[in-house]
Length: 386
Image (cartoon, rainbow, N blue to C red; front, side, top):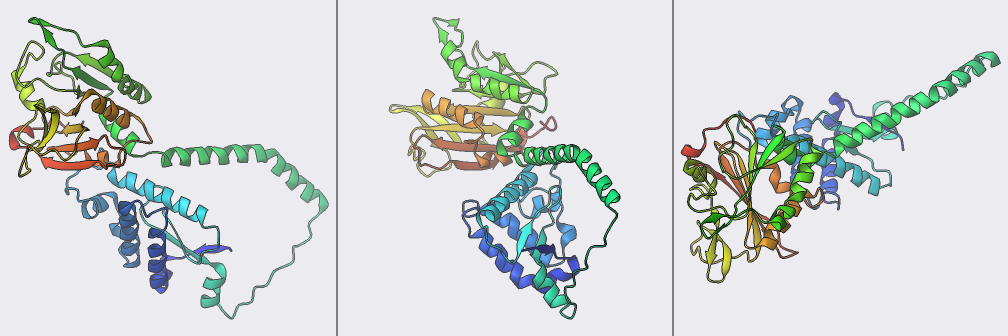
């Protein structure tokens, strides 16, 4: 069934039909697993049907739909773009699965947040111009020589047209692949450098080296850096070298007080569990456990074996990967370094002056638990964008 795009002045006529179409789409298997994508689709459709297309800008959507501050940086915060790409992919999957001719369809063109609506040509023409018959004009005969010339030109240009078409498909595919994994790590490595700190253990008063097997567990982090043409530098101190703007990645337990492995006490105060952190990992008689400081009984551990990710957006930005045991830490590292397993919850984790903490339970069916907190004032003097 051939379809035509509704013009802006025609959209109001189909308001109820388009709203019903969006409701059906959001109940489909392509959208049922993502409430945020349904919310995004309903938001932009409703604004369009209300004649408020001018409000469908990235900053406005970020503020009104995603709850961003009015001054947020759209360049470093790709939340709106990632959500729009996800909705485009889900719409494509929905229409691919529903091969029957649907009366009304919705599309979101790349580079825009204004949806487009399509209706069957017969339906639109039947309502707009019922008195006009569909007359097919017979083709005008052309000289045989002219036809042969045109055919030759078409044959000559066909390889070029095919190459251009494949190039466009490739570009659109690459754009569609930008997801939470790419957005997160592009933000981490936009300065092309990160510092990796693993706390060495002291033995007999002497500073011990980090074990080789612990470094092997972090190999996937170095592989991810290579994908983004960046590098990770090992560091033995929590204070980055002067003039270094790279993010600090910490693995495992961090010393609770300055020692030979930590030469800078102020840096330790910034990185170790601060007043703004809700969750901490403490050693108990039954082993290391995640403790919720805001819980009525902080000794109750509802998470069991789990990894704990803490992202601090303060004077020194840091990513702290910790867990109740080595297996939980290793599992968390692998989750962050695999495109298919990467959690959507990490998209909004680099807002200035905030602490994002995510608990990743080891149970296969358990869901990640997310906490967003504001940093205390003493920790929010930012160096600028990451």
